[in-house]
Image (tube, rainbow, N blue to C red; front, side, top):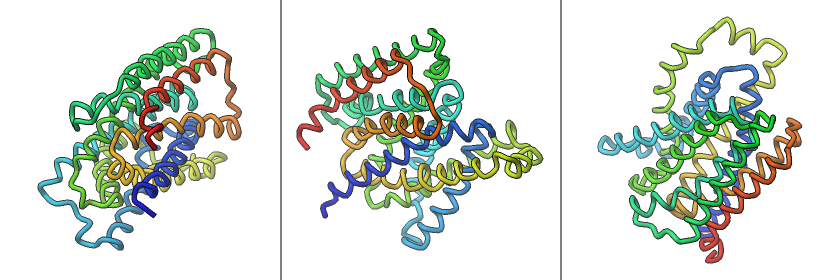
Length: 302
């Protein structure tokens, strides 16, 4: 099987894990604070990936000194910037709307890739960006009709996560190609964990409260949510995503983000009973149409 086909398969799995992460995070937020959730998932993910990286690559899996700055910048984008803004944003918007806004990543990525990586940007991309923006405005308006699912601040925070993801893919592309996706993910998550720890201990650490939560009625559900987020959304999804970025390039890889809203909507409906108003559905359709239009040329070639 060619690397391109492997990359397509890897991206499909990554989007599945990302799509389910929105309702899983939303469920954990009912009990724990956003910084606590991210810190826990990074602790588990870092330990898991460092052991895996050591077994598979040994000393070859260590970053070179001259590349450390790249890894630090990547960690600032993801997990620090992305997880912080996404998790706080999910307090203010529904999981389905958050996934729709994240779905604008493939519209925005080619614009920055054109200037920073000299990738071509088509007219379809600019038209799709405009259409997607109209859909986002409609989603925000739906909040003022009593839905309460898309506050303006929440939308701003999710868009901060979008731009963190866009610049993340660009910087990953600039990393030397000899680093494996496992190594990149292990290093970025470990650096990101040390960035998160001060926020955790200053703003949310309460040992007695955490113990009571994990021992209480919500304990098992919270542990399942965090375990899924750590192993699948913070580990395997990033490994698959990094492989896809290196093989397909940022624009094509991020085109798969179109699948996230559908996965999140189905998960939210089946497991959390999230209801959709007509205006919300209409706004989602407009955003998805804009995203698909922006990617039409790439999909047609494939």
